Structure formats: structure tokens, C-alpha cells
Image 1 (cartoon, rainbow, N blue to C red):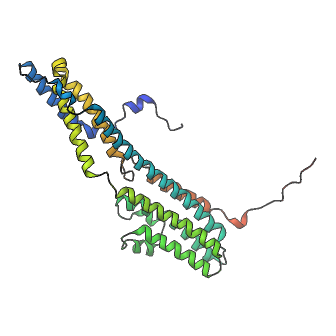
Image 2 (cartoon, rainbow, N blue to C red; image 1 turned 90 degrees about the vertical axis):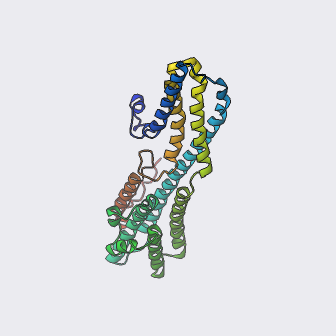
Image 3 (cartoon, rainbow, N blue to C red; image 1 turned 180 degrees about the vertical axis):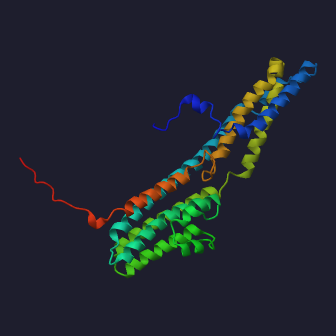
Length: 304
């Protein structure tokens, strides 16, 4: 509730609104309505109320609801996947930091490096989903030679996952992890890779083209035919009323388009940058803790 914005502030908010995207279509419908109104005033027989049944409103409404719900399911699924990635990273980082034994300073340095690789995996996943090149944000989380290596790879997140798994296997061979601990950590790493696969499924499975095309055709047909239906009653008001109706229906469709791919940089997309920063802060906080420095005290005896 702390981030709730005032109602009127949201009402008149331009950034994140679908208004810029739908305005060209709305003005087209308004202009068409004005032309038909002028023809009506000139005595032309352009009032055809029967066209109101050409595209039944209930059918169009169901199509719009299905379109928007499908898009929101993709958006929410993406958010759940990234929430799972945050939790998986925290759990795996904690287990690595607390469980893997240190024999010298190089062991601690290796643990710190692999913990930052976990954040690097999330950042690389974000860049992969956005189809963006490697950047300074990722460079801060990996060694210089690793960053150069990632630049030559087709799938940087999978390469980072391989490095983490290789580190865990190395610790197991050196006796720093027992088989049960190794299995638990590999399972968590597998969960992170599964999140990557789930996000790729959303990204690479768009709404079927035939559905999108047909819905757009029906929306335009409905708005244009509405002009002939109401011009006999509204006359010069036809353009304005048709514009309002077209703004409503085109806006609902545009909402679905806006949120169906939730991994971009638009105002309505998931805040992946903020999520990655949160993960980085969590890891740095964990690194600042030393498991061996915790002082455990015997609890006080209960007294009558």
C-alpha cells in the first residue's frame, strides 16, 4: 500500500498509458465519423442501424477479454518465474556460503566469486530475454576473462550455470561437500535453469498471428460500422461518440499487446533491473557475514 498512487494522478498519467499507441486509430475513426456526419447532413442515406448486428458486441467483448486475460497470464507467469529465481538464488548462495568449508584464503575468494556469478546469471538472463548485448552491470559480477568468454557465447546464462556447476563439482572432489550437499545445490541450480527455460517459453511463444489479425479486423469493422448505426440519431456528435468507443476497445486490445512480453523496458514491463539490484544487494550482504564469527550462547535455563 505504500506505493499506491493517488487516483487522479493515475487518471491523468501519460507514461505507461496506451493512449499514444491507440490515438492514430482513434483519430481515424473520428475522421470517418465526421465524414459520414457531413454526408448525412447533405442528405445522403448513410444511416443504417442494421449494421449494429454486423459484429455482435458480446462476441467482440469475449474476444477482447480472452486476449487481455491471456496476456496477463503471461505477465504474471513471468513475475512468478523471476520471484522463483530470486528465492532460488538466495537459497543456493546461503548454502554455498555456509556449507562449503574453507581451508585457505583462496577458498573464500572462490566462494565470493561464485556467489557473484549467481547474480551474473540473473543479469545475463535479463539481457538474454531482452536480446541486449553484455554490459557493465554483468562485467562487475564476473572475472575479466569470463566476461570475454561470455562475449563469444550464444547463450551466456547457460555458460554461467556451467561454471557454477563446475565449481560445485570441484568442491565435492576436494572433500568440501558431501554427496547430499552437492545434490541439494545442484537441484537449486537446476531450478534456476528451469526459470530461464520458462522465461524463454513465454518470450518465444507469441499470441497466434491468425488470432491477432482477426481481432484487429473485427475491432476496426465494429468501430467503422458503428458510425452508420448511430449517425441518424447523433448527427454531428457521431465522430466524438465513435472516437470514445474506439478508444475503449482499441485500448483494451493495446493493453494485451503491451503486457504479453513482460521482459522489456517499457513502463508496464517487469522491473527486472530492480530485481537484479535486489539480488546483488542480498549477495553482498551475505558476503559481509562470516559464518564462523557467529557467537552462539547457551539458552538461559527455565526457572519456576
